[in-house]
Every structure is written in C-alpha cells, then in structure tokens.
Length: 393
Image (cartoon, rainbow, N blue to C red; front, side):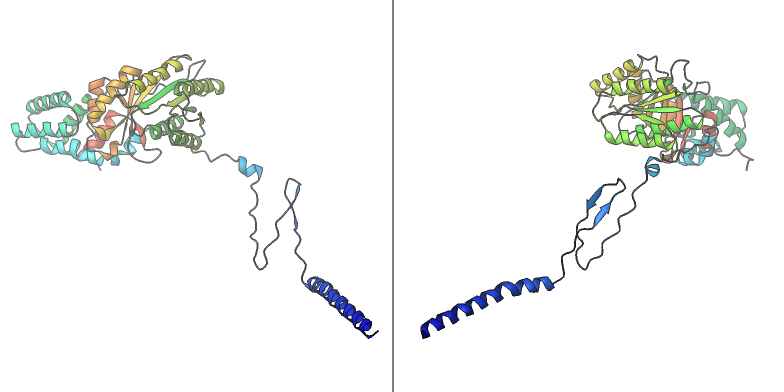
C-alpha cells in the first residue's frame, strides 16, 4: 500500500511538470508584441499590392511622385536660330590667327620702305605658309608686283585696297555659293553631307540644319551613319533642338536604305529639305567609297541629289585637297564646308580648295557654338583677315 501511494505521487509530479513546460512558453509569447502586418499600397492603376514590412527603428523614404502623362509627353523646347545674313561679319574676331599671317602679315610686308626681291620672296613665303598653294601664290604675287609698280605709291589705304582685291579675286568672287535647298513641286530638296572620319561631319550636319532652319527652311535629318550609334544619337539631338525629325535605324543597317527612307519620309511630311549624314570615309578605302556611291544612287531613285557638301577640316591643310578630289570623283561634290577655320593660321586653304577643285566653299565653321557656322562671303572674309580699313573706327 505504501509503495502504491509513492507511485501515484510520482505520476502526479510528472504530470504537473509536463503541464508547466507546455503552457508557460505559450503565455510568454502571447505577452510579446505581435508581428507587424503588411500595409496595402494603392497604386494609381487601382490595383492593391502588398508592401514589404518596414524594419524596426528605420524611417522609410518617401517615394517620388510619379511623372504625369502630360509631363512625359512634353516636347523639348524648340530653338529658333537667328537668320544667317551677316553672320560671317559678326564672327570676324574668330579669324584672328589667319588675320595675323595672311592679312596683316602681308600688309606689313607690302608697306616696307623697299619692295626688293627679298621682300617679295617673304610675301610668297607668307602665302605658301598660309596654305594658299603654289599656283595661286604665284598669280597673286605677280599681280601685286605689277600694280605696285604701275601705281608708284603705297599709302596704307591703297595697299589694303589692292591686297583685298587680289585676295577676293583669288577666292573666286563670281562662284555661286548658294545652297540648293529649295523644294521641288513633288519632293523635297536632298542634300548629302560627306567627309572623312574626324572632320566633325555629324556635328557639322547638325549645324547645317540650324543654318537652313534659320533661313526659313523646314528640315528632316537622315542618320545614314549606321556604323556609329553615337553619331545617330548625336544627330537626333541636333534635330530635336530645332524641331527637325530624324529618320534612323538600328546599328549596322544598310546606310543606303536609311537614306532612301529619309527621303521617302520627307516626301510624306512635305518638308523643304532632307539632310543626310553619311558615314565617315577614308579616301583610300575603295570599298567604303563604293558604298557611298551606292547611297547616292539609291537616294536618286526619288530624284537627283540637289547638293553634296564635303566637310573638310581646315587644320589638315593641303592634305584636305587629296580627300576632296577622291570624294568629287565618287559623288560629284557641289560645295565645301570648311570647319575649324577659327583654330588655324592657314586661312589660305579656302583659296587652295577652290582653285584646285573648282568647287566653291559655301559654309565655314568659326567656333564651337551651335550657330558658329556662316555662309561664306569672299569680301567679308577678306575684310576680316585684313582688319578695319585705315580711317575707320
């Protein structure tokens, strides 16, 4: 009996121990703070989503307000470049390097007390150093020697006038420098922009677009330099700034197809001028030059190309002439755009290009700004080189 009571007591104790081991932990957990529940977030679409719980002790950043449809669709501000009339005269200060060598340097030599053989040789050297070219230099010096001998006087005003006339004549004052950008009854005018890599061709194409817009033309751009995605994006940016559409295609697409599509789009939208930027070509790469010829042939399925502008870097000097000759053979260049003329003392390259090729310089770049490109005018150019005439303020 005594053993029975002991056994019952042991069972009771074990039961009580088990009860406390099961109940007490649950009570402690119930007294702790409950887990945070996920708060619903309502999006503007009306769907309800579950936001992740916030970490304790950290502040949650406020989400920025979502862009409205009106803000997302807002077009960039359209720029309106000033008309180009007189732009070259306004940019005359950019020609200071060429002015010192080709202009004022010659005036200083011509004003020497004695115009002997040594002085005339220095005049020749100045012209050659300025990249005028041998043939043009010989002609200019011969005319100057004859005129100074006949006139028998060398006042500052007369010397300046005499030199200005010779330089203007050498620049080809009678050349047609107008841009053929007038639309045809059934289609826009088409301009091809060609040139070697590194000449600033795509940037120049964008500046030409601004020149046309400034003079009242509506423009569409064709990004046919499909080998460089950066060039396509760059051209599109130039177009957006003046409200011009850009026809583009994925990288590596046939440039001729892009050029064709650009003209077709120009016909549909009835713009005045389609301006096509082509891939930069090295003049010794026959295959690439053949491809450029293909671009021209495909574009002309719509009609003849009205203008083919060759972009030349003025700082390349006489090397640019070899480039120009090859391009002329392939695509019949009708005009030259001379860039970086403000950064070189060799302003005579204008004379050399025209005399060698018989192709007029139609536009010149005189700075880095978007509107630092000007229609070329021989008289204004020479006036900028020589400085103000004597007796003017």
